[in-house]
Image 1 (tube, rainbow, N blue to C red):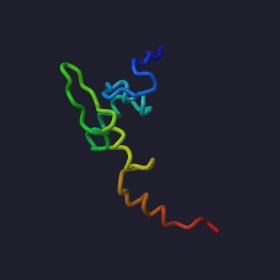
Image 2: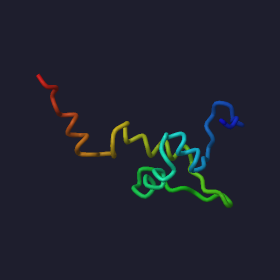
Image 3: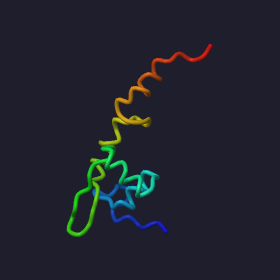
Image 4: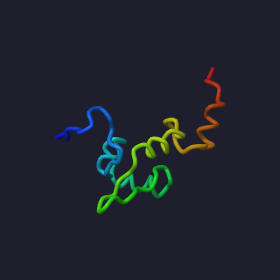
Length: 85
């Protein structure tokens, strides 16, 4: 069941791992992996809670442009390939 948002359409400023995973359509273990690999920012601790600042998550994903790691040489090389004749 979807929780009602207290902020209308505005995303929350700080999200839990479960919410972050759901928003990115990945598992919670993938969130941990992405943090270890530097794809996602490290979480912060608010009292007894672990949270991610949503603005930082968005900023960390922006350079990916939807495909692979930032500055991925393989993806850069694909941009230089001509379509097959």
